[in-house]
Length: 240
Image (cartoon, rainbow, N blue to C red; front, side):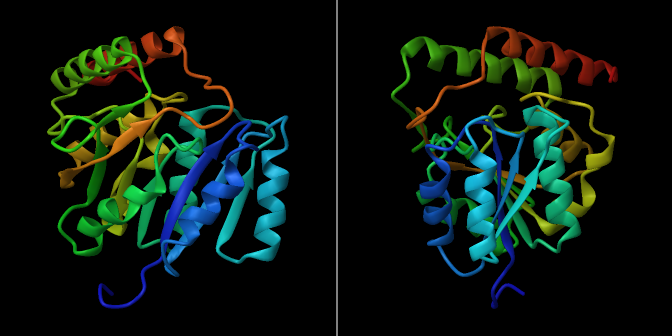
């Protein structure tokens, strides 16, 4: 399988990303013929799902799940992983749709999975060569503090446990118990790593440069952050 084309699906949870989605999809598909895209859109008022639906009608490498009764980063991510698993993905890229996760880093993240060196590859801001751009120093401090807390709480063998830019192998897709997870917000990122560690899946990190979104408005806020950090304690105590 490694010598031939793989089925690599980039999953993009979206809510009001009409200003970004067309260019982002084009950049991802341009990487190579083995790349496909799955957008999970939560009925965006700005019509993101319409843009993606029109593109999918013209390109068989673009897929969409248009959700009208659910909202949330956590459930969108889980829906994407289950769809990719059930539709024969050899590898899955998890990333944001606002260009904070630049497509130019995708090949370096996919390589360890393509070469069967790791089950999960994390795009890391906290390893040599990684970093953040366009963010105030206070946000960088928060990132470091949050990662220290999460790593200690969950015993994770990675430095950037809050990165949502990751690649999963077929083995990881079929091993991680997606149906068991309960996170509904961005804490799904850590719940996935928690379950991966419990399943003895191998993880590695590759440097990325995290950049502020090009357009649109982030839905992340302090309340969501505190809820996510509390969820780490619940995971550690087995309360879900």
